[in-house]
Image 1 (cartoon, one colour):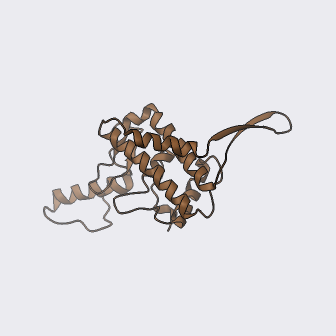
Image 2 (cartoon, one colour):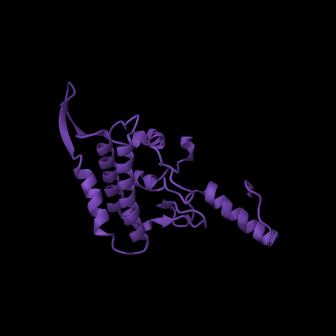
Image 3 (cartoon, helix red, strand yellow):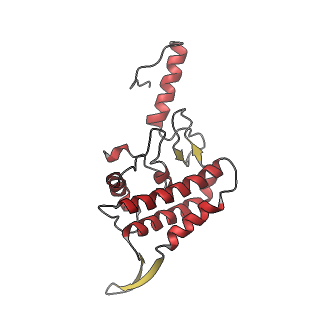
Length: 195
């Protein structure tokens, strides 16, 4: 898979949820997870596993499902299910973060390390990213893309933002509107671009 196919640009936990667009699951295999992790490596607290196991993939799916459940509740203005919140806490508890002091030759610095298998540590880091996202006041601005065939989520920096991507979904909606106005009943060609 080409890593450019992954929707990116939101907070890490949202990017994880957005790996399950309407067209299918972009994290169906350990190889796809490895591609996504390479793309997100600079946002993870430790180097991701180069060759994730099927168990690591299963743990990432669980965290993603818990985040999705909470976000769905928030979008519907409902209380998030306790099971999803506990699932995120359990993922973090499976590989707790411990701050270690390290002498760098001139001063002490604190580094965070998790113990356990790499998949468990990865799931814990992603669950922690979810806690950061869900406790951020910006979560009140959470939106789902307004394109009919898109389910991606985003937190808009500008209140008028309506699509996950102005280039991808925004352009598709504008093309459809243009054709509706100028060619009633006619379907636009795929790949059409309207300025």
